[in-house]
Image (cartoon, rainbow, N blue to C red):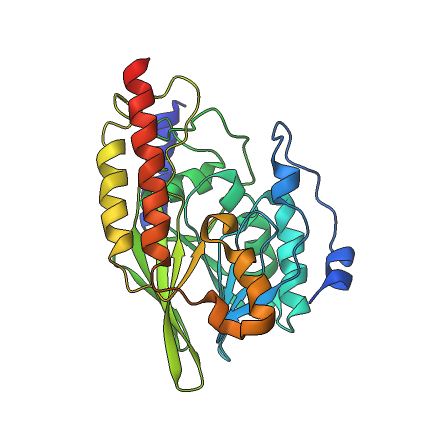
Length: 301
């Protein structure tokens, strides 16, 4: 069956502090053909960011747990081999994977969606993704409009999804999260916002999708027939993200929001170290610089 038809049918169907825990996590075979995956998937002790928001991901790939007495929300699932570590990290913090009721996705690349199938199997949670990303998740690979098409390994496909559209709201008990379309890195990128409270103090939390202009060899952001809106999408996403209420930023790759530098500072400053109302603007500024550099490079080719 042609890939485009397969994806169309899939969309139609979709629409209807833990060194011990880390050591005990089952071993999943590493992703083949990915030189950086072992570095990304290095062990990371989980930690509280603010209120009911916790980092439970691996060293180079964010996964965030937002908790409530009625159940929890997990954002992103890392690589296939990240899933056992995420589950172990959740347990280290005193929570259970079985109490995760909703799993949200940023985009359909293997480094953020590869572990979703196993996390869903262990939790029986619903997975929510954008219409474009849901097609990726259903097949376990990105489509031809993705800048990294055919440059990424396949991963286990995901079932039982709900489509998350721009402005869509998802809740588990008192936890309410909003989806924000931030395409460009992929056609279906989503960022997520919610509030976390510590006593009477509540902060605006942002989980920002990747916004960097990277691609397979031969793809041009400035001249792509497969994704002709790539540059416009990125620029629109920059504007969207920098205007969001943003007290605490967590990026899909933690180093892009200096998360571990903030963690180190929290040893003395506590949760205040994670608070930076300018963080979203700084994140966008860096991504904007990457895009303009990429476009200038494409002019020279």
